[in-house]
Length: 138
Image 1 (spheres, one colour):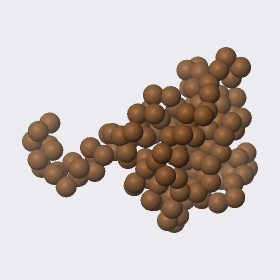
Image 2 (spheres, rainbow, N blue to C red):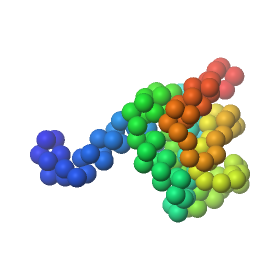
Image 3 (tube, rainbow, N blue to C red):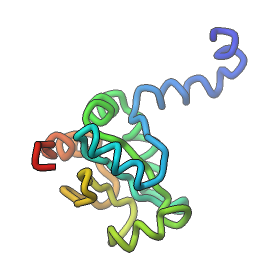
């Protein structure tokens, strides 16, 4: 492990930041919904596009923070989805958005319980996350 981190020292810092921040789950939307239902967790969906400047800032400056990662990794199933490729266009029909990034908190039944638009300050994103409650009704 040490030899690898020395060999890719430039990448090491970036990977360390990613480890501390939000860990995103990959998979089909239906499998994510099933996982949320099974684990009784809310899905945090980062709906972004590749050309969106505020989306890139959010991913670089907020999602990589340890304090944000602590709150989101322990309480949510975190997913990021390019809304212009893969399952993104189909999700746009189900979850219409006004701009990018749009951040959704979605329960296991696929119902939006909270939605945020635009770049967020870390403390505001944490506050929004803590206001989302998971309960037996989900």
